[in-house]
Each structure stands twice: as structure tokens, then as C-alpha cells.
Length: 77
Image 1 (spheres, one colour):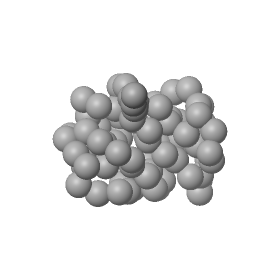
Image 2: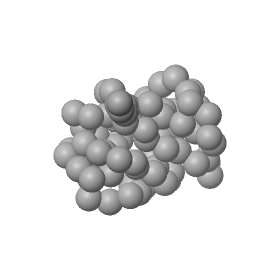
Image 3: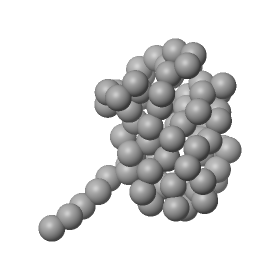
Image 4: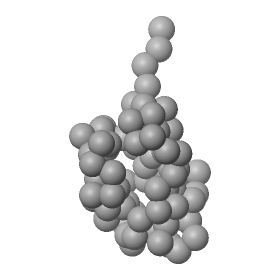
């Protein structure tokens, strides 16, 4: 089980800051998050994932105990 931390709009839509899911890669976690919280499923495709404070691709492995963050796109001006 991996605890995934949610931020900004994803956090608001999920109604919580963390979700525990199983997955050995970022792609597996992305799919598990969509299943565990359908309210954020549509947003996940545009989010970046960070594992242990580094942005990673979907094929990146996720070791047990890793810190995983879901970062939605941001804009500003």
C-alpha cells in the first residue's frame, strides 16, 4: 500500500489530502487512484507525479515506502 498525497484542485475534488492505493509503478498508481476516487479520474491524465520529490514518468517504479505526490497543472499570471 502506498500513500499518495493530493494537491490543489485534485485534493479539493477528492475531498481529502491522501489516498492509500496499491501499485508498483506510477501508471499502476494512476489507475488505482482513478478506481479508488472516481471524482478525480478525469483530472489524473493531466497531472504530474513525483516520487520521493522527483517528477517521474508513468513507467517509473514505486518502491514500498516511497512518498508519492500528485501535482495538477497550475497557471498564473
